[in-house]
Image (tube, rainbow, N blue to C red; front, side, top):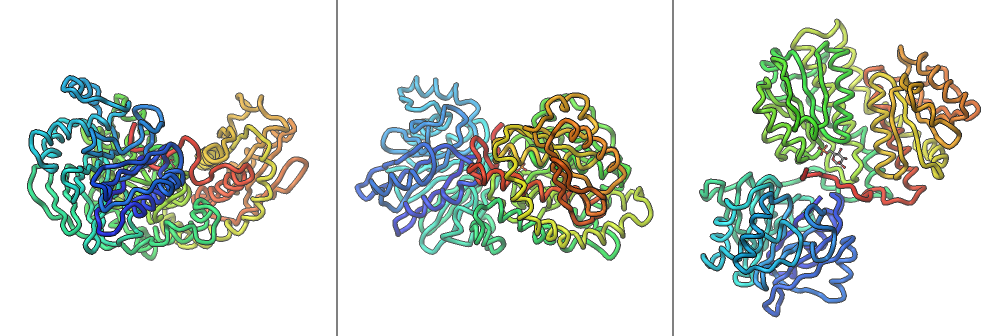
Amino acid sequence: MCGIVGAVAERSITPILVEGLKRLEYRGYDSAGVAVFTQSGQLQRCRRVGKVAELAQALAGEPLNGHLGIAHTRWATHGAPSERNAHPHFSGEELAVVHNGIIENHEELRSRLQGLGYVFSSDTDTETIVHLLQHKLQQLGDLAAALKAAIPELHGAYGLAVISAKQPDRILAARSGSPLVIGLGLGENFLASDQLALRQVTDRFMYLEEGDIAEIRRDSVQIWDASGQSVQREQVQYHEGAEAADKGAYRHFMLKEIHEQPKVVQRTLEGRLGTDHVLVQAFGPQAEELFAKVRNVQIVACGTSYHAGMVARYWLEGLAGIPCQVEVASEFRYRKVVVQPDTLFVSISQSGETADTLAALRNAKELGYLASLAICNVGISSLVRESDLTLLTQAGPEIGVASTKAFTTQLVGLMLLTLSLGQVRGTLEAGVAPELVEELRRLPTRLGEALAMDKTVEKIAELFAEKHHTLFLGRGAQYPVAMEGALKLKEISYIHAEAYPAGELKHGPLALVDSDMPVVTVAPNNELLEKLKSNLQEVAARGGQLIVFADQQAGMSNGAGTHVVNMPHIHDALAPILYTLPLQLLSYYVAVFKGTDVDQPRNLAKSVTVE
Ligand code: G6P
């Protein structure tokens, strides 16, 4: 998704802008550009379709040197990916704008501005912003005043940055629905849509809040809130996760992040487990009081986070006896929903900025839910700020577009929620909380053991190199794990993969099974194992290639066309977390074999901040 970087400094800022864009590459984009107020006293820009490396190469050929600039990675929403649609957008030779988000009234603005004589050179909604600003600037003469006057006319969600050749000592920024952070330096200041972009130049940050407008100069930062009052925002020193934007010894961020799971699961548990129970306060000061009233749970999320919600449903109903519904946010937000009394609304999101999930939360607030809880990986995200309760996962920044460690830490957070609700409501069977708390403490070690199978899974991945379709099977809480396994494989290897509850096999997908269709199955040692084994017989009998990740105590062994990988034994309730790991590794190695762009798969974005 789009990324913004800006800099005003005494040193040359172009390398800072380009490095910042590189650090935002993980969000997914299709084109990139920079605009710099150059030493010749002009605003000049360079834009390229494709990777930031291509932009950097173009800039090496024709350098843009200056002390003020803005830059952008674009993920097309209005207008195809092309150089003319890439940001920054200009109005005349005087103003440049970069923008994340969507201006919903762009058509009306465009015709109004065209009526005033402005000529558009792109198909973007963003270009309406820059001409509107130019129009205001001509009336008001000052960039901050122009931006303040333009904001009420912009409908939609945006984070934006603007520079002017007439006032080339400042960057103006505005935030409404799309995050922005100011990076503070000594005699230099910066702006970005994600602080990761600025970690190379500073560790001091100031996060803009909804409705804020900021004027950023080399030696000052001024911020006005939504009501126009001059305000101070807190300065935050950033230490945590300093290493996250670096691949270290790993070939890809995704592999690094898969291997970080024992550590980040441990962190997510830290401070949240008592001797034999979960510390309900982990969900916030009012959690205990609110949880006591919860009679239903509604979970809403997108993508991988939705799969975490699907697993949680088995836990909430199976362990805590609390009815639970799960829905993808893009459906929930547009549906007429009947809300049961005393229902807790739970949103799950790695980024906390996913447009559909945020919109679902905002709708939910009007619908009479008991309270809202966000399970999220980003403490400063919109989702967290707008929810009554929060449980932060501690996955650290996740760079690979395909989510891995965020998913397993979400599952840990959801298990903590299940146990907390069950404890407070008194609905857990005796002994369940102490037993699972003990198992959770052992979980990081179990995950480490599963990751030790890395090389075995790499070997199996070779079987997939020439395949075009795959089936993933699971039963019970392993069904959503199979769904997540299928999603991972299609996201990064582009092999078509579908997940089915194993019991549905004979109701359709069995027709597809032959020697060209590998079938991947997760088989913990639980009461569904025998049923699963007979499902697998159905596959083997049709010449299908079976890959089974099975509990070492499940009594399954290799046979003709059947590859069994023995997994460490684990408590059945935590099996979905453990069994996710080999499926992540499998997708990773298949993608490596196929030579795809593992960390930035085609057409996908890390953070989907538009509908
Ligand atoms: C995108 C990402 C997925 C992610 C989904 C939801 O599709 O590529 O990895 O699961 O958005 O994102 P969220 O940040 O809300 O978890």
